Image (cartoon, rainbow, N blue to C red; front, side, top):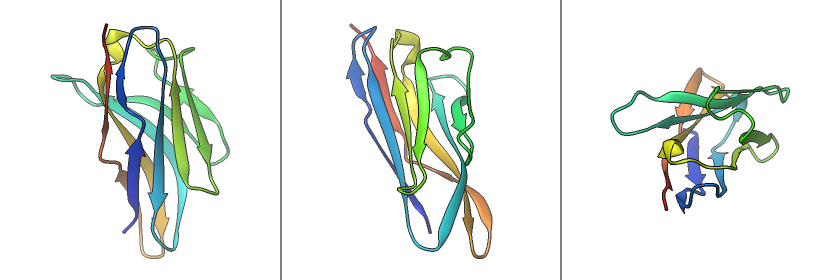
Length: 119
């Protein structure tokens, strides 16, 4: 079983920055797409950003120009640099990876990390 472990969440003032990380660990696996989702209280989970194995990126409209997704494919880690944070960015952030093992392909999820933007 591949484990995804997130880090980097916390409390930040409006206009501040945070960097989230999500590292995959296990044996005999490879990863294709990597994504970040978020879910605010009372709202559905939404896709924030994604990055392909080739490095192509896409972003949700609400975070374009403020967030940057990147990956270290050797370390099986995905990052989300969040700048210009707003109160409406407050949510639990989840990483998601398309994981390939010997027997199957599946979407793996991190445990979630809380990001709170407040003065």
